[in-house]
Length: 206
Image (cartoon, rainbow, N blue to C red; front, side, top):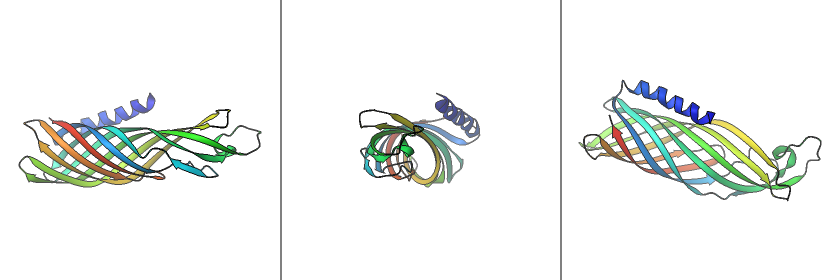
């Protein structure tokens, strides 16, 4: 729970900052994540690879415009149940003291919390349509559980924190005085992976 509490605190602090920014919007979106790659956490041996090539990802975002042509924002998404399998030495995956290091097969499941900060150029294509794009900084908080599949079913947990730079593009349309519809694209390379996010969301501008 402390991870979610920390992320929530960051978003709340950001919201107080954005209160001084014009056109502040909150958007809830659903993204299709196209995922390639597989994280091994430097396990020695070989891996068979990822069994997860796509995920549906919920995302909540907050953004505003400090200038007519500039937008800044933050978002949070949860990417869950990324599965893979392979084999590695027991000393690097399952480290029981005093045992001989042997090659063991395993399954792995990883959950990722994705907190992003973005800033980009925003252009009005029409009085009710705008386009924005720019760089995006991702903070990934990951947790993987390796499970040995030889019969003992031992498990071992790996946690990691990573920062990665990506990019985004958004197309927004006005549905009325306050409501907005948004289509988005994001690209980023987490450790040992590459992800394309295609999203559709509904927002409210205060």
